[in-house]
Image (cartoon, rainbow, N blue to C red; front, side):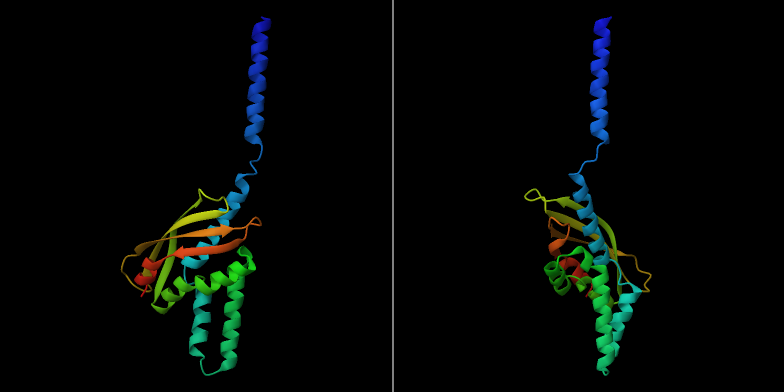
Length: 183
């Protein structure tokens, strides 16, 4: 009988330890989840749209070419828009680099050629080489505005470096196929 009680106590203790271990927060995956959420947010802002606010800003930049004051106001609106959508997720240098290279490249081509983009799927994984590097692949749907034609699909890939503060320090997007499709 004592042997049965001892076995029961051992099983109970092992179960209790496993239960406590299962309920405790895993601090290793929390930054990963936040980093993936950051990447998904940036990709959503970069590959969905252009939304009406951005279209109006670009229309003001392109139609008010005669009045310098209106152009300056439109560029201030664009700067405010990019600061709101992108800046909180980047280091200062990463933000400048992203805006000058990829920030609006895809949306601007969609705008100029009357397309709408829709980020349909994104997959993000940690690089095997470094935990601060993430690889992503995107499935982007695009369609001419006001067209009855079905949506077309193209893929893009890239890499993101995220620093210890959870901010993007560098990003590379390989989207040549999408750029060609939007022309």
